[in-house]
Structures are given as C-alpha cells and as structure tokens.
Image (tube, rainbow, N blue to C red):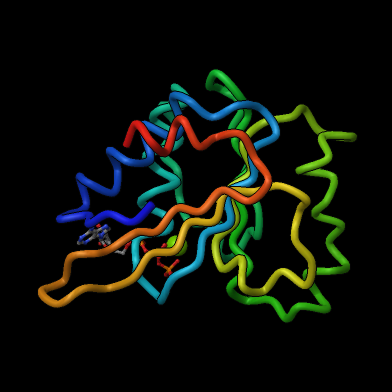
Length: 151
Ligand SMILES: Nc1ncnc2c1ncn2[C@@H]1O[C@H](COP(=O)(O)OP(=O)(O)OP(=O)(O)O)[C@@H](O)[C@H]1O
Ligand SMILES: [Mg+2]
C-alpha cells in the first residue's frame, strides 16, 4: 500500500492508526532517507498505544523502551551501527519476545539489519517534490493486511 503524507500531522496520524491496531510481537522495519519521517511515525505509534511520555530518537541510546501504553514499545535506531555490530546486539530477543514482554518493535534504519525477523511490516518513507512524503507499507508474512487496507 502506497500513500502520500502531506505534512507532519499526516505522518503522526498514520502512526496513531498503527499504534491503535497492531498486535503484540509486530515488528516494523522503517527505511528512508535522513529526516524522511521515521521518528515522527514512531511518535504516532506511541500515541496510538497510549504512551504519553515524549518519544525521542534513540540514535545515541540505540533502544528506548516505553511500557506505559496498551503494549510495550521498543524503539531502535541503527543509524550509527555497522551490520556486524547489529548482529552482536541479539535483537531477536525483541521479536521473539523470549526475555522481554511481547510488544511493538519499531526499527529505524532497518537497512542495517544483517538478518530480518520471520514476519514484519516494512515501512518505506520517501521524499516527494515540495517536501511532502510518500510511504509504502508492505506486510511480510504477518496478518496486518486488514489494518493497512483500512488506512
Ligand atoms: N509527511 C511529512 N511532510 C513533511 N514533513 C514531515 C512529514 N513527516 C515528518 N516530517 C518532518 O520531517 C522532519 C524529520 O522527521 P523525523 O525526525 O521523523 O525523520 P527521521 O526519518 O526519523 O530522521 P533520521 O533519519 O534523522 O532518524 C521533522 O521536522 C518532521 O516534523
Ligand atoms: Mg529518526
């Protein structure tokens, strides 16, 4: 599914819809250029989950965990890492939900992942002329097509 996001509000609204409807264990792999709107979308997801704490980019902390909402939100940003460094982080614990409470995992700069989960929602943000954005959502092996169809 591809759609235009006219402004920051539109990106937030898409995130809110996702945050309200996604099920535990959903992994969202976000791709897109610097400043394309990845963090903004995750801020919307946080709102949709009922998180009131401000969601800030985890560029330096690698991962921020928010447990206040309907489901935990695990927000990762791999921008500063090389794929071999990412491999050493054992991120699978987040999507396998073995050592952590299953929640929503949102990964910025997912291009840096040397391996991907079995199922995930791919979200690609691109710049359009005039500064708006386009977003493409592709579910891989996960049952969220209905959520996407409703957007
Ligand atoms: N649809 C949109 N149209 C125009 N501007 C937008 C849109 N969505 C978000 N923005 C704005 O783009 C800027 C960058 O957004 P954001 O920080 O979410 O990008 P990012 O992809 O996370 O960047 P980075 O690559 O640095 O992590 C913000 O000022 C945000 O308000
Ligand atoms: Mg960001």
